Length: 291
Image (cartoon, rainbow, N blue to C red; front, side, top):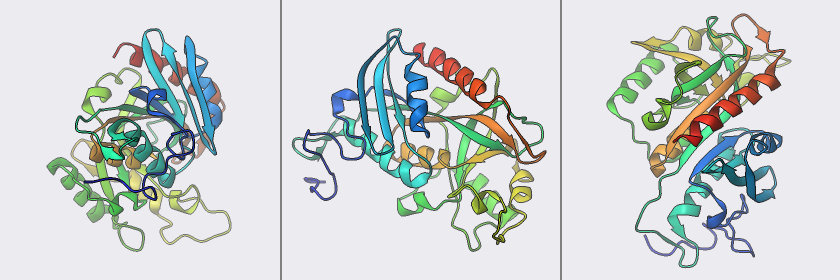
């Protein structure tokens, strides 16, 4: 590929990538992503020192050190469309030369760990528990705009999902991608493992009814009852599959960690969500410091 044109890679007046407003040197190679911009400061408050603070729209970034580990925490906002922006721009910061607008010959691999909230789809996964996603299964359609590459296990799980749930009809063509084993293996103790489904919205796409009827009123049952060998769907939210899919295509190592704030089977909601999230942040930083 030759020079990337100005309309395709937008660099602002200070030489930073447009949406994140970051220079390449302002980004660490290990990155925590959070949906809520206010959660960035909750994460960085556990750093020993902060080097960089940037904000543009809903995208807030703090880069600093936890012990000897350089970390960045970046807010994505909600949904796969924002993940499309964040993952592509994080990759561009390390793998595109902004001066020549060309792709670098040597590829930099980022470790990207999402910390977010989620709804459980199993009665055995209560509120205030944690899930480390083995796979992200998207019903949001984002990755269908890219050349998806699935391994044999992913193809089998996906085909079984489509057959069992029939959710490809009038919704989207589902896609699936796996967590990075190099990260997942460190998040076992106190974590449930399973497939996380990524939805394109919070209400109808997650089976909630306020004033509008649903095209798939049995959505939650279809997801909860799915199984393929040892695989089951543990939870759903709005970013994981997009992170896993884009991260894999771009050659980065990704992991999604969820604090369960709602159980959609027993219809409970956490009364301790903030404290549980703080504990998950602390646990995650402690683990990342050792990697």
